Amino acid sequence: MNKEARTYKRIVAYLLDVMLVFSIISMVASIRIINPTFDKYEVKYQEYTEVLEKAYKEEIPTEKAIKENEKNIYYLNKYSVSTSIITEIALIGYFVFFQKATDGQTLGKKIMKIKVVSASKKKLGFSNYFLRLLPFYYVLIGNTVGIFLNIIAVVTLKLRIYSIVNSIIIYTFLLIAIASFVMICYRNDKRGLHDLIAKTKVIEE
Image (tube, rainbow, N blue to C red):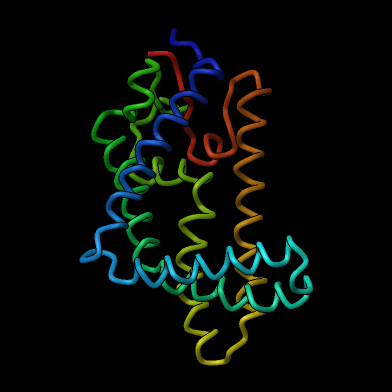
């Protein structure tokens, strides 16, 4: 009988996978043909950090810095649409399609000799692997909703609404990701929230 993967193995495998995927995303996103707004994003990011620096040095009031950076945050999201799409494709491609093709193993899991299996002994489908992306939903859903909110912001100029809704999405799913991590650490079966929803578990190979 295969035993549940040890917590440290899951954490190391996860970190290896995240570093790999986001390194690829970073390289692809910097290609101007694929991401034509990359330079505009860099300019706005520079403006964003300059405002923060001025506020830190008390050169401008905090309230003014917040107001200025509301617009900068909006434009940062607007100019990162291509990057958002690249991120979604990479996450789904790697953690869903690649992991399904390799029978429950990412490169990180392969190195740590662990794998994803069904908790009910049924064959895992694409839907199971997609549900396991729960810790990344704040990226997937946040990006998708963020693109929609960009349209609303441009039409209505309700930049504050954009910032509030976007923040709610990010922090909600970050809390879910943290909850999954805590469950993996302290549950006897080492199953996180995403494992329970996807009806999966991670075992020693």
